Structure formats: C-alpha cells, structure tokens
Length: 192
Image (cartoon, rainbow, N blue to C red; front, side):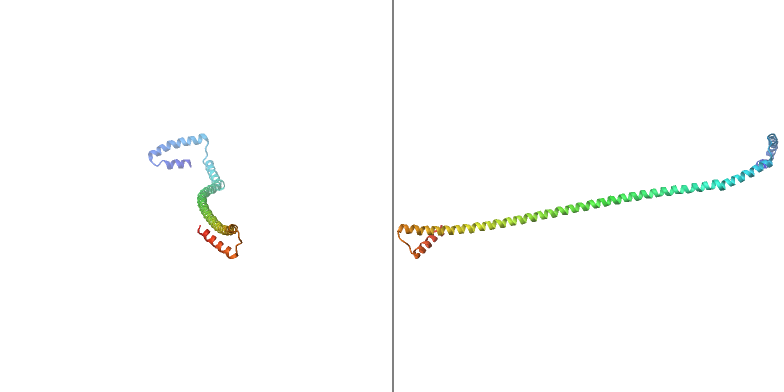
C-alpha cells in the first residue's frame, strides 16, 4: 500500500528512476524495521473502525451536547438582552408614571390652595359683612338710645320747667297750663 502511494506520487520517468531509488530505500527500511503490509492494513482497518465508532458514539454526542449548550447560552444571552430592554422600558414607564403623579399632585395642591384662598376670602367677606351689620345695628341702637335720651331729657326738662314755673309763680298749675308749658318747652328744645 505504501508503494501504491509512492507510485501515485511520481508520474514521470525521471521520477520513476528516483522512485526506484526510493523504492530500494523503502524496501530496505521495510526489511530493517520489519514492517508487514498485511499488519499495517489490519491496523489501518482497526484504526478506521475505531475512528468511526469514536465519531459515532463519542465525538458526535459531545458535539451535539456542545451545540445544545451553545444554543442554550445564545438563548440565555438573547433572553438577558430582552430582559434588559424590558427593564429599560419599565424604568422609562415608571419614570413617566412618577412624573405624571407629580404633575397630578402639583395640580391637586394648586387646586387646594385656590379652594383654601377662596374659602378664606369668602369667610373674610362674611366676617366683614357681619361686622358691618353689627356696626349698623349698633349705630341704629345708639341713634335710638340717643333719641330716647333726648325725649327723656325733653320730658324731664319740661317737667322741670313746669315745676320751676309753679314755684316761681307760687301757684298750682292746671293740667291745661302744664300742657301749654310742656309744648312750648318742647318746641324750644327741638330748635336747639
């Protein structure tokens, strides 16, 4: 077999003579080392069978396992990338929700402030109105009291005028005289 390989490798005549020299060298090596062609053929057949069995039962399953692991790793990396993008989207969504909540809370706070201000203004206006009403009532009461006091003072002054007149004149006045003096005193006091 080795000679067959050597024969195929040297196709020219010059190569043929060189081949003869090598063949002699190969022949010498074969005899010197005790190489047997049948034995080498058997070893080649055994090695081929061993290589096929190893490929079928060892290398092929190992390669399949490696392919499975590679695909699992790739799917895991793809899943991690998907999760990363979903996490980024979730963070953006939560940031948007937080911003919306802040805007809503600011709006509620502003509405509450406005309502409180309106309520305060309304309460203040009502209090001012009540105070003005109380002041008006007090002024009316004072005016009534003043009129009453003036009426009392007039009647007291008229009574004093009649009493003084009675004493000055040293006589008892009749009811008609008293009424006449009272009217005159009342007119005089009204002009004052």
